[in-house]
Image (cartoon, rainbow, N blue to C red; front, side, top):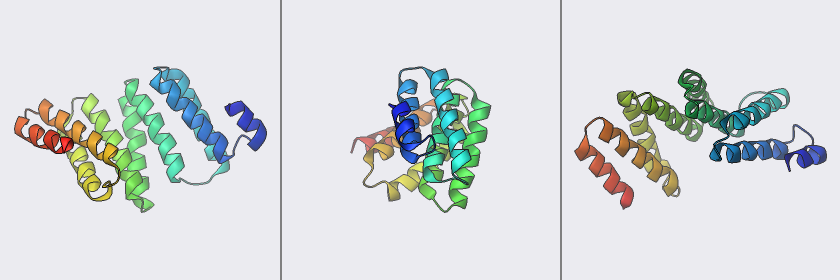
Length: 169
């Protein structure tokens, strides 16, 4: 399908790039991380050639690439990329983008068993989400579950209970 879109719209058209992003996402869900990474990198390269600067679409693609790195255990690469995306989101004045990248970054720290840093970042994301994700319960719910899990790892069981009960409301 993406090849047909390339033929129809061109290699650098936003619909073609979105097709690549979706294809990479599907491969990731199937556990084909190396293939997914290659397609994300192709999309990033095409975006760099055709669109100067970062926009929310580019940041989403880069966040997904960082998620692949995390799933592959390439934590330093994931942290480097995500830290840059958090900064870029705030510099662009797009808190949604920044906090989404921060949520991914917290997952990396969680995987590294750096629960204190994961807790701090996830708490900030949840505070943002409580105000801004009123109509996006899925993001709010997953952030609460992640924070509850972090609290469990830290032995903060009463805090875990509170946030997990809130998630169920």
